[in-house]
Image (cartoon, rainbow, N blue to C red; front, side, top):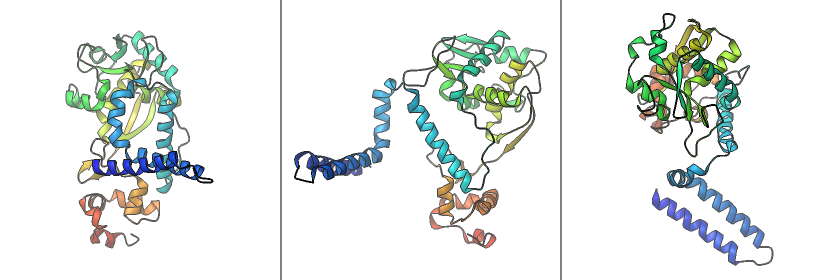
Length: 318
């Protein structure tokens, strides 16, 4: 990888130097354009190698919200393209966390006022023990046996989990997190920070659907802690015990037996999948992906050599 980067950098520098030193009639603009294009191509190719260095040395200087918003909007558009390729209808309503920050702050404050959350070092945490000890509530409705599972909590919270010195109880989770340098931040009564992962869903869903939802969907891997935390904070806010009446959890595609994730670098876009499998329309893609045996084979190591023949027999349109 390093040799390719060096080769690309050398080629780019050659073009830039040529544009700098050669200024013959009619050539300067052409060479300058070529230099800009070469530099852009090199930066694109080098982004993975540069990312760690840039984050470490300059990440703390990034404060402009539009930088984060532009990146999110780019992938939002890519997602809708993928959904269209799969013949998935667009949603009636789209909500974005960045457009709900005032509502989130008010929601968190009401949970604090109800006695189910507390501020600590500029962050706000949900008090799971107080909530679970209340006669009208109990924590971890969906997966009671996971209550206290620190590994699951760490995986669910990530960098939002905070140190043990910040929380009253290891099971408590962030409603609002004080931002570190280089992270998005908004003003709040507790200082500059950003919403916790779970609170954003409760706030936006409550705004759209009120104090009780008939059906809540999501991946089965989100049952705990994400969906259980959604339930807890929403019921603490509304003072009820039926924020969601029914959950519909779905499975997900796996790659060689592993869940798709950024950390494993095994993400596949719908466009890439459709192209690899030679699928011409979303209807066939949906049926194919639901067929666990064929999907598992086609998205595993065998994908490099094409779709297994047994799957082709079952799906002649491949």
